[in-house]
Length: 92
Length: 212
Image (spheres, rainbow over the protein chains, first blue to last red):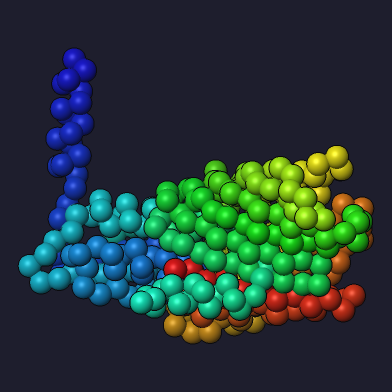
């Protein structure tokens, strides 16, 4: 029973992870200062699939340009924002 | 050969000394250096954030309290934890707790000492409020308690690539001394922040911080 539960959790996590390509727009909560923006920029620039990062305090968003022929899972993007201390919602 | 980051780090340490009540936990993988300086204190703090809610670091604190005889120097290894964070659309709120252990130097004698800190803040792009309490144990003496509160506002909203300006009033008190009020101006640009102020008693305040 326990193994079945673990297996179902594993496969459900795979099913929920959605690979994204091209450009990704993320609305961010709690980003109010230049230090916040700098932390998010540095965190995303460490990800090999990311080509460019734009942050707007006024628009409260992070805009990612992914490298050609590369994809990045939405869960990885949201986890990166969480590790920087913020909350994100992927939009358009 | 020194890397560019190490050069910046050395320059920031040499620049001089303070603690800003800034966030002791930043983003995972981030390293920050803070210095604070006034006629009563010199403070240097470094911290590495290894988890989104926790960092480890070092603090050097030189203090010349009016209420205690002689100057003191403290060296602490610290653990900083953020148990609470509220992210709203236009603001954020935080609570930080820090504990540490180290040494006190007084009259060239070293004794063990410990440190505890509580820090709470709320900030938007227009307003800033924070409270800070520092505790340091002293051998055979009453502990040192330092309380600090800050209120601030920004005269205009700046974006990431702009220079940010804040006007802040700081209220500070140590043990049985009177509250000292210090108006100051905070300026920051991307990953560098500095503050310049002068208290109503005429004591200067110089703070500097960098995130690497």
